[in-house]
Length: 457
Image (tube, helix red, strand yellow):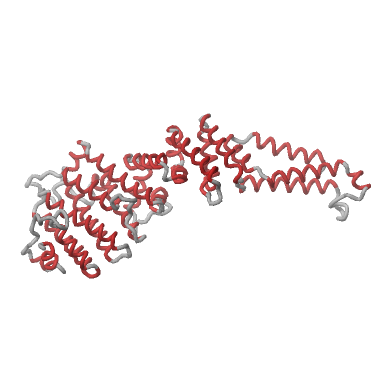
């Protein structure tokens, strides 16, 4: 290779760069660093040494082909060309943006946002998201610059609409860069609310897939959005997930058309489309599956002074369902007089199952006590509503005894408190009803006599 060939290679590299998209140009320009300057400097020195070959040879300054047999100036140019080509390919595809280029990169991101080049903007963000996330050695000034840039992005409705549809995984990672800022929290909640309210959303599609999967129903690579949300380590964002499920169920139960459908009795609870595919059915499955996931991690989520996550189930799901329940006609012969009855029973049963598992888990005593009070309150409010027939109350009493029995073995004091709270509003209030029964099927259950005795205290 001669000098013209070397210069042709440089021209090809520059021409190829000029043909790249704006997003790739921005990304690769900000990866340009010291190693590239060194490559250009060595390349120029190589070209100059070949141009002045005779002069350098007269002064014994030919390196390296002065002392390597068979190595001449053409070989040197070929070696330099190959080295530069390989260097640029590797550094372009696998390089990273130097820390001192953060401010320049943020300025470029702002320019792409202003010019509405959303596709290029998403490319730049996806290529640099890991770089943005690693801030251990970042100065406070750079952290502030990055925070301001992210706020500008998130406040752009056209950008958030675009990226939440095109690349929701990247969107979630951007939200978590400064997850405790007011803007990030609101946008995270908006994203969840939209996903939970749209029957055709990725989140609800994955929820259906997870529910139909074999046990254990743990999110995997087939349900990437749920996997990301389930593995969320930040307590505030994880708690927000519970809150948004509760809000969406409350909104659903305010719709007259939805209530009319829920008041109708299902022909078969196993195949009923409303039970299996309605928003409320998917939300109830999702919230309890999430609670079980937390319990496996030996925790029950609580953010600051808010109530723990199970209370969201009680206040935002169970109580609205109980309020929506109407006393059905006695002519209905199905097991569940309405779909509302089914969902109420499902929530009570799932809460009881959660507490039975918690009784033998490694959660703290405070967490177990909070969950116990929540489940007891659920039984209390259902009975206090006086909307359920004796047969339904009998099923719920059997479930309460099972919970009491599970607690009695390892947490006798908490078991006693559970029994007491199933018949009154709080520990020191007056008992409002009597759970005594002469039903043989109930009395033969383990710890049934002790449960009824404690409930009467």
